[in-house]
Image (cartoon, rainbow, N blue to C red; front, side, top):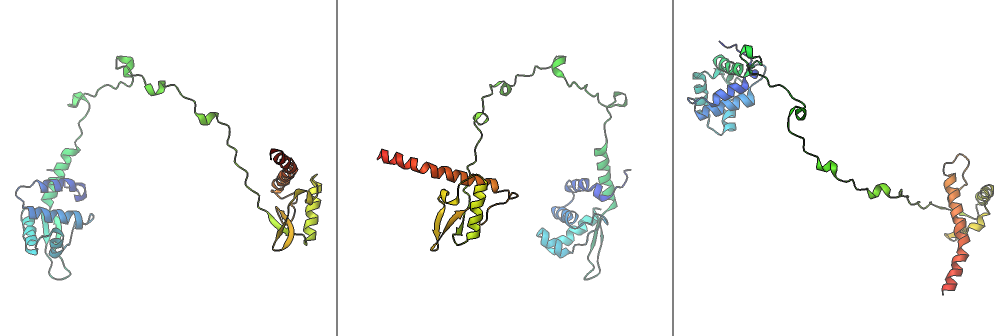
Length: 253
């Protein structure tokens, strides 16, 4: 006799045998399937849905559900403990005979055939990881690997140079004598001419002043000092090239 296992271990076999029971009506199978898959508690192996709940879910009438429950009880698919009023629903539990039948079906599927011929098992084939060395098929050539590798234009292209972004300038009025003086002194310390040589003088809101990289010149610890120094160098080159461009334009005209 098969050992009675917990229902959660043989649930699949139980449902398979239920669906193959030719003596069970379709309504009974439908009700049993709904109870097992929706309301059964996996620990207590019990369910408490009301007849109205089952009828609403399966689309059947309450009387049809009651007849299906009696059929499942008579044919030993469920153990039914009927309630005695509101708040005490009928209790459903898979019957012990049905669980034993499902346990027997589970044991058949759990049997393992031994691989030793002396014990009636099958002969295990010998593994041959290197078939080509022992007379196996010759591995066909990989055409993808034999293709000539074409040079990638991106590999031979010169490195991309990121364009330099324009340096944001601020307006320093000529009336700010201390700031203008410090800028002139800083430019002289860097080996450059005075502030007037850079042609940075402009007007804003009716006041004359200079468009400079900052309100004050940078000190030695400022990381942007080199960037500002490059700005003045480029500006000086631009101013120096101005007369040459004007002469070329006059000759062209």
